[in-house]
Amino acid sequence: MPRIEPLTPPYEPEIGEALRKWMPPGVAHDPLQLFRVLHRNPELASRMRVLGAGLLAHGKLPAEDREIVIARACVRSGCEYEWGVHAATFAEAVGLTKKQIDATVTGDPTPWSPKQGALIRAVDELHDSANLSQNAWNELAAHYDQAQMLEFVVLAGWYRTIGQLANSLQLDNEPWAATFPST
Image 1 (tube, helix red, strand yellow):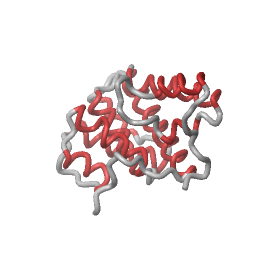
Image 2: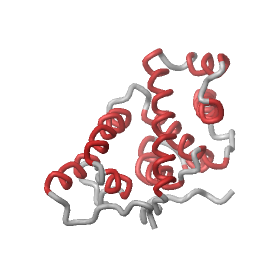
Image 3: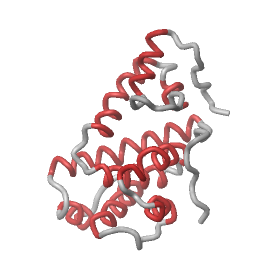
C-alpha cells in the first residue's frame, strides 16, 4: 500500500487534463500511480513534468542510450517500480534486447558495446560518489558531445530522484510492468 494514496477517477477536470499530458498519446493504461500521487501536489507535478518530459521526448542522447541510463539508475536506486515501467514500455521499442534489459539488473557486462559499458560504469560511479572520475568522463567524452554529457549527468540524477521518490512512497509495481529478473 503506497504511503500516499494515488488519486482515483473521476478526476477534477484540470487534474484529468494534467494526467493526460503525462501519458503518451494512445496509451491503454491508466495514468501511472507515480503521476497520480504527484498530483496530490499539482504545482510540484507540473514543474516535474517539464523536466521529465523534456528528457524523454526532446533529449540529445540516442533513445537506446537514454534507456540504458534510466534502467541502470533505477536499478542502482533499488527502484523496481520505475525500472519495470521503462522495461515494459520503452526498452525493447528503442532496440534493447531482453539480455541487455536483464543485464541492467544483473550487472552482466557481456551484452554491452564499449560505449554502452561506459554508460553503465558512469551511472554506477555517479550513484556511488555523486561524481565522475576523469577516466569515466573521458570514456563518455569519446562518444558524446558536451551537450550530451550534460544531459547524461542530469538524466542519471533525475532517475535517481524518481527512484528515491517511488521507493519512499512505497509504490506497488504497475500491474503490466516488468519485474527485476531473478539473479
